[in-house]
Image 1 (cartoon, one colour):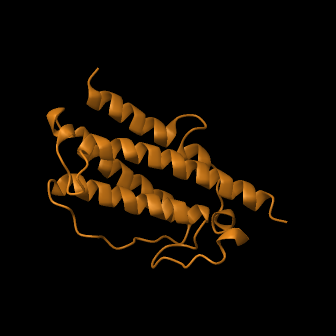
Image 2 (cartoon, helix red, strand yellow):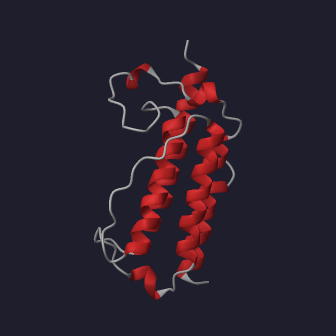
Length: 157
């Protein structure tokens, strides 16, 4: 098995594997639940185009925007890509659809690379493989954050 094969398996697992994935974290997520903002985030200045900070919806929009930027970084290598605007979402269904589409586009870009291209430098100074590994860790981080947000919503009162 190649490094790229292993990388793509881990990438896919972060999306769909059992309870350790974003799909598990968002299973049956409602719009009301997704927009719940715990008081601990009440003083966080909202980012332009993003849902309120700390909400499950914020995490989904953030992931989608990161996937777009990572994909642009891979396609622009070795140049650093221009910053991109935020693509927001008003509902869970919209956020999930956009997130999955952007994630699939990123996966297609990675799958199209040769083994040697995994070691090419990006505009950030990291290599492609370092970026993809970071993306997998990033998925795990935000999956856990969504689960925590849901627990806070369930115990809000």
